[in-house]
Amino acid sequence: VTFREDYSKKVQNAARNFSAVTKMALTILKNDKVTKGSMNLKRLKAGWDEKYLSTLLQDSAF
Image 1: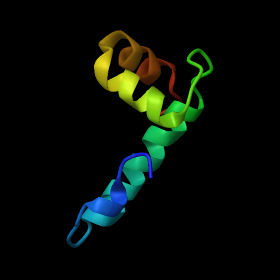
Image 2 (image 1 turned 45 degrees about the horizontal axis):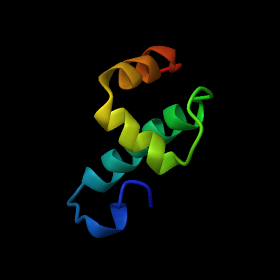
Image 3 (image 1 turned 60 degrees about the vertical axis):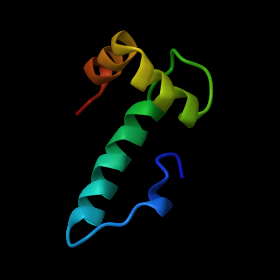
């Protein structure tokens, strides 16, 4: 429940779209070997630090 998906309501295809984006984001965070810590910590750091977010996106296989 890293993205608090249990607390948000979705309509039509939004749930499927949200699920796909969430899985991609979690995969990117899991593949990060530089930062130690929980998935939630990595997610917060990516939101706070643009350099870290840029590094994550550049290093991802997507």
